[in-house]
Amino acid sequence: MNPGLTKNYTATADVAQWHLVTFGDADYTVKGASASTEPLLGVAQDPASTRSPRVDVVLSGISDVVYGATVERGAKLTTDAQGRAIPATGAAQVVGTAMVYGQLNELGSVLLMKS
Image (tube, rainbow, N blue to C red):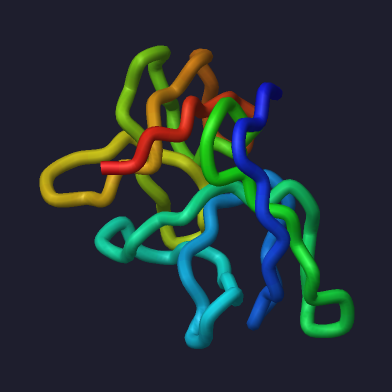
């Protein structure tokens, strides 16, 4: 992992470690990403919950990420309904590029470059 910019946010719902996040309902908040059409912010570095809501999010650079499907090196990535990184298709928001090959629920790597 080679994070560039990492920022700490308040999670408004449970967020899983190494999963993609999107903006929460208020400033300086995040929630787990669940749709490829929503703006993708980055990758949660820690798990967060309503009992322990603070979470570091890598916004740029290289981060570990959980894959939600088979991913080839160089694939543009978006999110699945659980916040895992999957290959982007169509009008999906792109969060970055896969740095390594991986399969469902494996820990992969993403170079964060939002579309």
